[in-house]
Amino acid sequence: MKKSGQHPCHNRWKEDVFKVFFKEAVESKGAFKIIDKATGELIGSTRFYDYSENDKSIVIGYTFIAVKYWRTGINSSIKKLMIDYIFQYVDKIYFHIGSTNLEIESINLNNSIKYSI
Image (cartoon, helix red, strand yellow):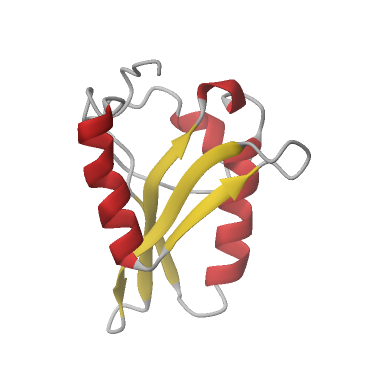
């Protein structure tokens, strides 16, 4: 696996560290496994979490995309699907994005999302 410098947990690519992320994702019951339908390959995962009934909000984050799929538009497609779906149930969506993530613009869906770091 290739290490990434964008995420705040710089050693998450190590199996023992990633297992913690994976375990939390499964336990959250809001995680999605993303599969390439053409090849059957695992693209990655993402999830909804921290739903607030009072604020009618939810967070999208903990997105992991295989290096092969970086800069292909898949992350924007995934986020658009999630946004289109969840806005049926909430009024606000927050994104959990690491402060060192230099690729933030790649998921901004043509500048339609306002965010702060």
